[in-house]
Length: 288
Image (cartoon, rainbow, N blue to C red; front, side):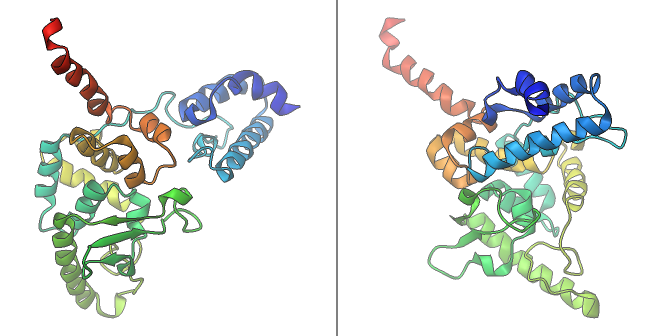
C-alpha cells in the first residue's frame, strides 16, 4: 500500500538506471509534507529494498535510495541538485602529478589517473595484487573498501596492464613505504596494503580528500572544486580525447555496459561523440 501510494506515482515513471539521488531527495521533501518521520523512513526503506533487488540482478550499479538519507528529525539530507562531476584537462592532471611528485601520495594519484580505479578500490589494493615483475605489468582490481570487501559490481573485478609511469611510481612508493615501516617500528601494523597510513593501517574516506586538497592547491587549482572520484573521470576523459572507443573504456572502468558508461561519463565522453562531426566535415567538405 505504501509503495503504491507514495513511491510508484512519483518515481515509477523514471528509468531505474537514470534515477538520480537528486530525484529521490526531491521526492522525499515532497512526501515529508504528507508523512510522519517514521512512515517516511519506512517508505524510503521500501525503495532501498526494491533497488537492492535490481542491484542483485545487475540492472543498476548503485543504490541511490541509500545515498539519499534522512537526518534525526526525518528530514532529507544533502543538496537538492548535487554538484556535477567534471574531469581535469591533460595540463591540469600533469600539474597535479608534478605537485605530488616526491610525496607519499604521488603513486596514489598516478594509479587513480592512469588506471581509472575507484578510490575505494585503490584503498583496498594489496601488494599481492600488483605484478611489476612479469612480462606484462598488471594490477588486479579484485576488492574494495566497501562494506563486505567486494567490488561495486561483478564486472568491476578486472585486471589491467600498468602504464610505464605507474610502474615507476609504484617502485618508488614501495621503497618509501619500507622507510616508513622502519620509522614506525613496533607501531607498524602489517596489512599488506599498497596505500596506507604511516603505521600501516587502512586509509579511510577522509584521508584522501584532505591530502588531495593540499596537492590541488599546490598545483594552482581551486581545491574546493575537486574530489577524489574526479580522478577517475579524468581517466575516462583523457582516453576519450585520445579516441579510445566507449566499449574499451567501459571494460577498463569495470562498467556493465556502454549505456551505463555513457550516462555516468557523458560530459567526459563528449569529445568522442563530436569526432563524428569532425569526420563528416572532412568527408563532405565539398558540400560547403
